[in-house]
Amino acid sequence: MKKKELNETKKKEISELRNIINKKRLELKMAHVNILDGKEKNLKLAKNLRKDIAQLLTFISEKEIFDKDKLKK
View 1 (cartoon, helix red, strand yellow):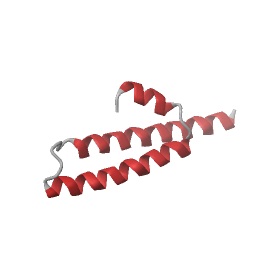
View 2 (cartoon, helix red, strand yellow; view 1 turned 180 degrees about the vertical axis):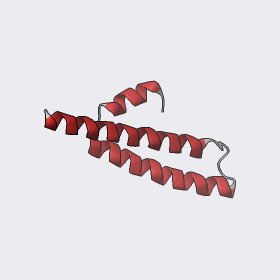
View 3 (cartoon, rainbow, N blue to C red; view 1 turned 30 degrees about the vertical axis):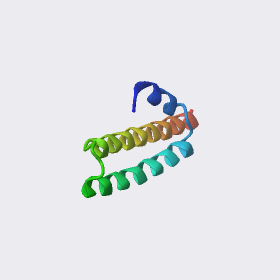
View 4 (cartoon, one colour; view 1 turned 120 degrees about the vertical axis):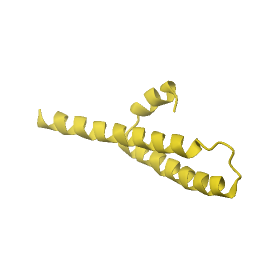
């Protein structure tokens, strides 16, 4: 994802982020199939999708930690 997209996704709610992750995981599965079939020319697509998913999961965990700290105070 580009920096602008990352900043926009940081502002989203946890449920929205989970929906995005599910879509990215489906894209990843399709990318693997297309790469194996030789239909996909961009071989780095799967790597980039895995990176995006990891970043989104990090945002979710940050939000959950921040929410827990907020409740304690």
